[in-house]
Image (cartoon, rainbow, N blue to C red; front, side, top):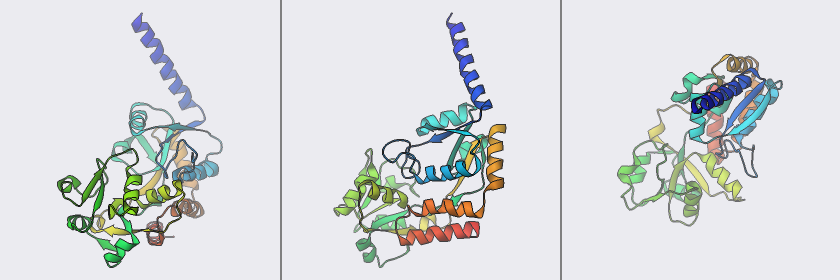
Length: 284
């Protein structure tokens, strides 16, 4: 009896997937990682990734039904690698583990790399330099570094320095917000992250200050900038969608998409870097 029930449930699940794959419905995976994608709360669907997706949907995919499916990284991985649902995802980077599961659109934008973030007063102390070795700055005990425990985007192994007196380690549900508070209070001098998340924190807390600046790091000087694409399931359904996007997307569309990203750059320096990067990559 249990085997029969399991067979029935499996059949219903597969039939559901088959129906979805034959329908005119696109399921969009949506994280809750402001300001990229926002799946719930008062700013729902207002992330820059959400806005880019809306542009894509309105311009090329009006004949499809669109459904947003909130996911965390674990569920995202399960859906992408273990099912054949008609999902689309993005704008997102080409992560190695997902390359074989998607058809990918042409590039829609490129972003500046993560940077050192500090107050303008601390930048002045460093003679307003444009680039510095992050590891050398970390070894300078005159400057206190705020380290997010278990974060994976640092350019080298931070753990060999965490016992240093000038390294402050934090792990919380909102570590960047906590570190920014510490910077405002003079408890840490600098952090390392993508500037867009600092801009989000300022909007969330209704701040209109102009205190933070950024510095490029030498450790990233030879690494490529992150490039974003739209992605859809690697089957006939997904190919049809990506082919349509690639055939119809125009320079005007790319420039419209770019405006959504430019708004989130932290300061004039990162806005200029954003403009230069995209001009170099796209030629306009």
